[in-house]
Image (cartoon, rainbow, N blue to C red; front, side, top):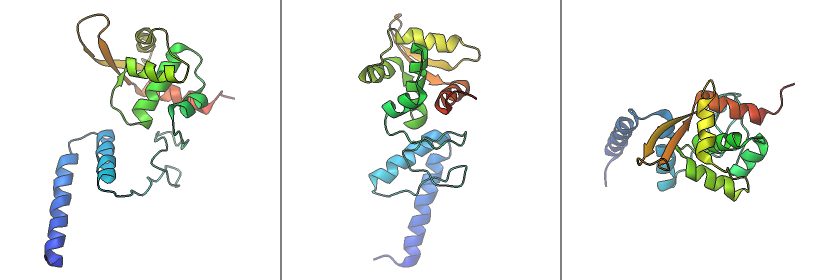
Length: 175
C-alpha cells in the first residue's frame, strides 16, 4: 500500500494531466468534459455560483445576463420564450441546444425534429436559419455544410446577438 506522500504525489500528477488536457479547450468544452468525467466517476459537483451570489443547479440555464431560470426540457424554454415566427422557433430551439445543453453546433434537421415533437415544426428549417443569418446583426451563423447538394446537412451556431434575442424573449415584453 502506498504511503500518504505517494498518494498526494499521484493526486498532483492526475491534476497536472487534467490541467494539460483542459487548458487548450474553450470554456464550454471544458464544462462538458468535466461534467462527463464527474458522471463517469460518480462525483457530485457543487452547483456553480450565480452572478447574484446564489447557487445554480446543474440543470439551470447558464446565461451571463444574471438570469437563473430553470429549464428541464425544451418545452419549458419554448413556453417561456413564446416565439411568434418560424425563425424565432428555430432560434429558441437552437438556444436550447447551444446554451442549455452545451452543444457547440446545431444541425437544422435535429432542431426541427425537436420542434416537431413539441407540435411546432418549421416548414423549411433551412429558410428559417437563412432568415436569422440575414438579420443585422446576424442571429445565427453557418459553421459548415456536409455534402455538396442544396439539401446537404448544415451546421449553425447562435451569435451573441442571437443569444441576447432569446434572452429578450424570455424576459417578456418590455415595459
